[in-house]
Structure formats: C-alpha cells, structure tokens
Length: 139
Image 1 (cartoon, rainbow, N blue to C red):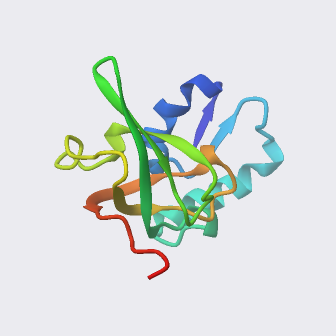
Image 2: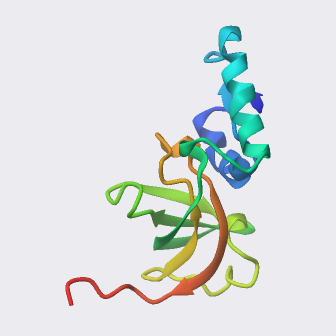
C-alpha cells in the first residue's frame, strides 16, 4: 500500500511500479475508515487471489508511437480490451529488456494487464515479453 502526494506529472514513475502496488491512495483521498478494505485488497493479492480490478489478463497492447525522452524512451499505447479509444504512455521499463530496442509503432505487444481497472492510474503492465504482428481483423 502506498500513501502518496503524487501529482499527474508523476504518473509515469508510478506506472512503472504499479504492478507491485495493490493500493495507491493520495493523501487527500485517504480515509481511516477504509483501512480495513485497503488491507484486505493487499492481503488477497499477497495470497494470489487479487480483487477483480487487479487480476491480470493476457492481452494485446497496440503500439502507437515510440519517443525518446532524454536517456529513456516512452511508448504511446492503446489497450483495446480496456479502452480502445484511450491512449496512454507506457514507460519503457515495463517492457522486457530483450524487446525494448525492437518495439516499433504499428506493432502489438503481448502482456498482462489488469483490464478491469477503473482508471488509467490503476492500470498495471506485467510480462510484456512478446511482440506480435497486427491481428487480422475482418478476414
């Protein structure tokens, strides 16, 4: 569980670690009366039975763009099975080391995403370890 004062400009830093953080609560949203629920979510995840919003699903992630940002790269992606009309930035560190240098716009990455997440800040990416060709749609 992480109690934080992060702002939207810290979103990328948090996204890189979000798979390991079952609960992220801003200081303004924290309510003591919810501490039991927060603890339950953490306990269930430790036991290997995460709540629906945290269950990973093996899905395709569409790569829209790859941009250099100083020494690292960021990748604009869409997770069609989550929100097909919502692009988001994926930190390069979320992708398996062996794939980082070969990911290009127009490709798809296969990985685990909690597609039942309610919003972008709750999404996590894990096991992004395979680049696949664009699926044949409408054939």
